[in-house]
Image 1 (cartoon, rainbow over the protein chains, first blue to last red):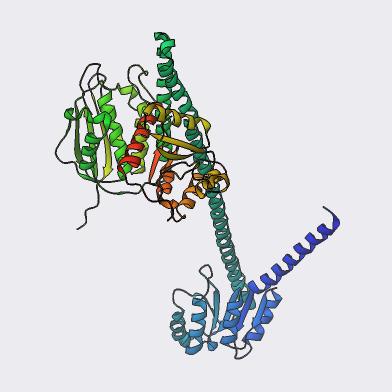
Image 2 (cartoon, chains in turn yellow, blue; image 1 turned 135 degrees about the vertical axis):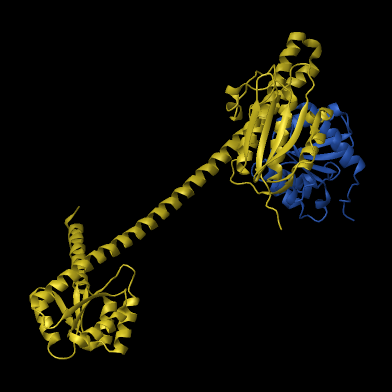
Length: 414
Length: 149
């Protein structure tokens, strides 16, 4: 650092030290209101000799004015407290900040008149930090009273500073959190855009692969032997499979965007529509039964459709070779939740796989046995969670499976 | 070479255009294609700028197949523009793109497209699409008047 900025720094430190000492003079001053006799003069002398900063006030308004500007403690003669002026003081004290508990010392004559006074002085109430000092008193008594008062006032200033510090720290933290959240949101947004573009852009080349393979099959059929045709079929199958994967990944990543809009959904109609309309499921229509009328649920219609169609697709897919799927859809009520269950008589799932099947890209079978991308259940799980629900399965290997999703009941409107 | 109705195809990918040509050939429908390789060329064709003023050689199309992902002037921009042209806005526009993103589909309809088709990976599906387009848009559906006078 060069000497110029060093000088500037020293000057800054000196200035702040100076304003601090002016502040502390004010913060620790003792306001005196004792208009009759020599109380004011003598008290001021005693306190000055003891290195305190007494300030003699003209009247209650002057004193209250200085209280508002800042002071360490107050010395009042009971003669100065008329009924009108005490109200002014009480009002001023009530406007002090919460950390402030100004020590007030009252010089009183004691005796019988004093007892009445005591009761009068109790109008300060439990809110007043009052010390009564009977005349005549020795200087030492006065001084020790204020030494204690100012000591406790110091503690109050510490509380004040701690509170200010805490507010500052909280404000800084808020700022940091806000900045980090913005950063995070930007990053997530970029990642989503990136993953979308990548997956989406893969479709172009995929189209080429599938199309040219098909052109070869069609246009060069006579030049290809069975093996050649078979190879080309494998090329087209690979492209098909990749396309399904791309669709599923896009679906899955779309679900990561925050909470879904929820509404009251007629799950009965939704399930029956899926059974009659979805090609893979429709062909098994006769083997899919829906028990009774399924209840309304609080859900996102598109997401719920995706979930149920995934579960139904799985139910008709994972059967023993040659078997016809037998699927039953029903519901159960559990407190504030509705459970929708899809039960099949298929190949079942061994216990130790029942958690991992809900993870993305998880498959228990190879492509020849049962085709699939391994994302269907991951999509169900994510979608259900976004709708504040739960998903699970009950199954045993070889004994069929029952997949269930639990969603909140719609709040009944009276 | 099939003659018949003209479909203007705004497509920046020569390959995707080739697949479309082939699909039309194999579908055996009476359709002619003309390709504009980017948004600017598409607008010029439709406006009759320069060579395109010769409507004998470059007639107005019965349908516009519009790829959304084109460089410089995008499909959305062409779509907005055409819907502001007094007579041209009557030409049915089918946005034709790799994107199945909900936002793109919705935006396409917002801007006034008549239909949105996601380019299939499978060439057979493309043939079916071409047949369907010909049957619906150019046979069953009434054609708007787009010539002046």
